Image 1 (spheres, helix red, strand yellow):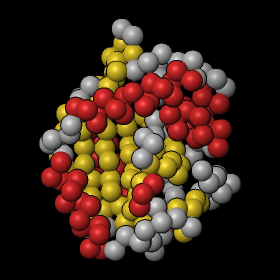
Image 2 (cartoon, helix red, strand yellow):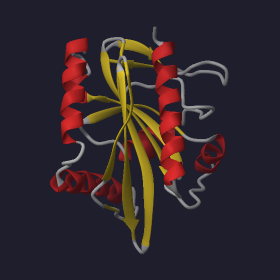
Image 3 (cartoon, helix red, strand yellow):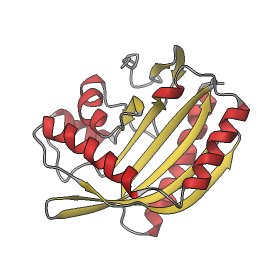
Length: 216
C-alpha cells in the first residue's frame, strides 16, 4: 500500500490511487492516523476487495491509540478506500452511473453470505493480532441520504458483537468519482439515537464535498 504523503497540521494529506495523486482532507478536524495505525488496525477493518488509502479519527482518539490505549473501542472514525479491481480503470461518468445503479438495486438485498464472508475475513486478521473474534450482524439498510454530481451517499446500521458486548454502529458510505477514480468513503459512529445517523449523514456529505473540491 502506498503511504500518505507526510503533511503538517495545516496541510492536506495526499495519496495515490491508480497512479493519480489525490488530496484527501479528513472529515471536519479529524487528523489522518499515520502509517503505523493505518497499516495495522485500520487494514483489519478494510475488506480485501478494497485498498485503504487513508483513515481518520478524532484527535483525542488518535492520542489514545498512539499511546496504546484503546478504551471502549473505536466510537467514531472514517476511512477512504479504492476498489482494487477498479483502481487502474478510468471511471467515466457512464461507468459511475452504472456503479450507482448496481449499488442502489442491491441496498435492500445484501446477501447474508457476503456479511458472513466479511466477518470471517476480519476475524482471520484479528486472530493474527491476538484479538478476540467479532460477529457481524446483517446490516439494517436505511437507504440513500444524498445524491450529487460525482457522489452518492447511503446509510445503514451494523451491530458488532465481541464476547458479551454488542455495539451498533451508524455507518455511512459515499461512492465518489474523483479525478476519474472510483472511491469509497466510509464514516462510522457509535449509534445512540436516530440523531446519530442524521448528524453522521450531514458530516459525510460535508466530507465528500471537501474531497471533491480539493481535487478540482
